[in-house]
Image 1 (cartoon, rainbow, N blue to C red):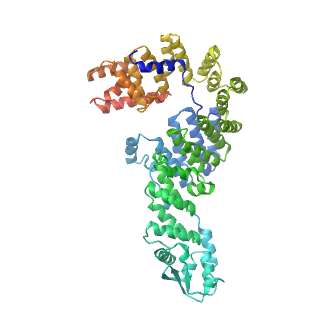
Image 2: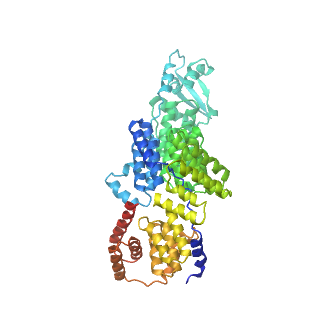
Image 3: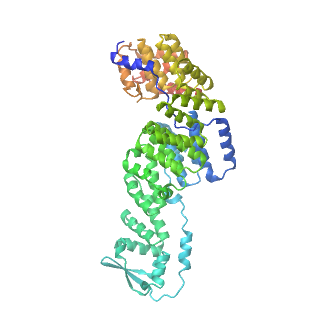
Length: 588
């Protein structure tokens, strides 16, 4: 072996294949039954329920790894969204799913294909808020005799003369103050200096009382007016300030500052506009502690102001983004806590309990993880038993975990993951037997192939080990399987085959790290390349032709990766690469 520092890592790969994680996905006992049930409900449900059903359908496809169907469900959720908040959430989710496809999205946008779904919504115009009841109440109280036509309001050292009845028409409290039995109804001068409004702000309020519209005011003045309007129940004025401020939100800094005010003053239009800025900036905005603080600590009322009835959808999105960044982080746990709190239906609860249970397990918060997996299992999510079995093994209760899984297998239709989980409780022939059964029931599970291949390699049965790992790589280009085969080739000092696999890995995931994240794949490629013959451009084209002709897709991807580093015709190469990746997508 020419890389002595890798010997220990490679040997470790053969001795102990990493156990697959408990996946934070919805995995029912019968996918066909659940899909049929969702389809039936979509045909008879109210328009307000459709987006949530499509979200659940998305979660179902996610458990199957069906990326195209997942995106289709998200798009349907966006199309069928009955509120501006749902449009905001699902539009941002679609944009997040298309990361790395900006060029294609821009081309499609020129013909209107996807411009709408990922574009900004004019929240200030599109979000309807019912203020009619307050207006009727104010109008009904405007009858009576009035002595004084005008009134002067003192703001600091300035006096602002206003039309008494115009100001009275702004709200019931002002009407009662100026026309009712309060002493102010007989006063020509009223001091409002202690109400945090500036002379400039109150002049704008007076002008609004006459014209019913706002002039061009600075954001600070509009904020003053909004707070004042909320304090004195001036609903029309508040709505106008709310919408004007919403139209001015253009950056994350704007949104952070204004969201706090929007939540304090119950301003849903402004809050939705700030929310849109945050969501359009995913995942980067979740690296901003100010944004995370807003989402993590919003109470029930604040969530209603911020996102209306779409709270569960919002925290589904935020949780998914946070788990992609770091599933063990505090913000991931906080978002999933909010998801649990937002869950209303049984389906929502079982998904939220299971996902939070997976994160608590990763964080080694075992008691809380057990409570959540139990709750998800009791809500009907059979896959959560895998989390309970893992906890049993961690605590040394291997036999209990084995019996728990055996009970699940015998009580219904057995699935591949059930045997995979039970195999982790066994050793020797029994584990091998359960993994064979897991592959029989679900050939797409990668762990059984990896375990068997590593075991065969330990027994010096090289050809059988390679044949075993090639079984799954023939139809599923799994990074962890390519990594294991790369280790095999390194151990055999077959560097040409090894560099083929590592270049295929880098094609699929340029930032991939091997040996449980300890070494960058790009670094290993650099080391191995020193021991491989350099190909000319002509050699590369010949190699590509040979591999393409023999349907060696991994080899073709590797050659294309190498050629893209040269000055070869990149357009043709990218096209061939896309065909290869599409073929794998269709296979799986």
